[in-house]
Structures are given as structure tokens and as C-alpha cells.
Image 1 (cartoon, rainbow, N blue to C red):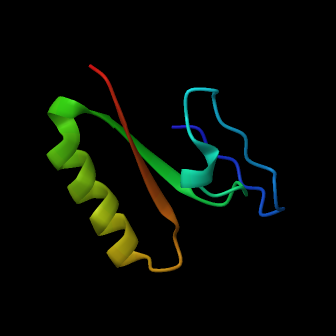
Image 2: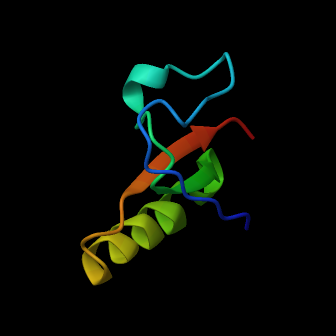
Image 3: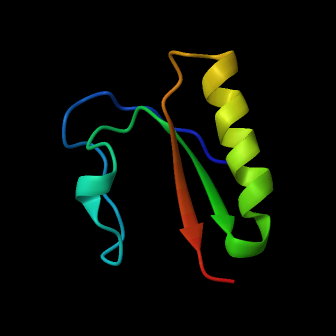
Length: 65
């Protein structure tokens, strides 16, 4: 896991294959990245993280594989 936080607007960039309008434009969130077979586990993890720490912004991304 790599961590970095930058709450400044437009501080977050994304690879060209992602739609940046679907994600925050500041780097003040944690991402749970999953492939299709681990979708249930990753969804449960993201949901628990968000519930246990309400101020934590949690984003999810499904990748092929």
C-alpha cells in the first residue's frame, strides 16, 4: 500500500483509461482496487472502512482479471 495525501483541488491525476469525472480531483481518499473474482471481499472491505471511519473517503475500482 502506498499512501499520499494532498487535499488541494486538481492534485489527483488518473491513467487515461479512467474517467476522472467518476473520482475525486483531490488526493484525499483511499482506493480499494479489485479484480472481478475478489469483488465481494473488496466491497465488504470498502464498506467497513467507510462505516468505521466516516471521515475517510473510500473509492473503489474494478479491474479486469
